[in-house]
Length: 82
Image (cartoon, rainbow, N blue to C red):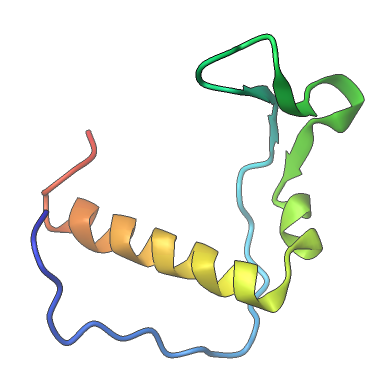
C-alpha cells in the first residue's frame, strides 16, 4: 500500500448532510467454527445507517473518520475502488 505523507485530519463542527440510508445485516461467526455466532445483526438487530452512527463513542467516530479518509484519499488517487 502506498504511504501517506503530510496526512492530517482536522476536526470541524458537525454538519447536516443528506446521505443514502441503508439497512446493514449480517451474522458474525467464528472463522474456524461457523456454527459459533459471535454477533447477530439480522432481523430486528440489523443496523440502520446512518442512524447507527449516533450509538458510537467519540473514539469510534474518530476511527471511522480515519478509515473513510484513507479510503477517500486512495480512491481519489486512483489506487483502489472501481
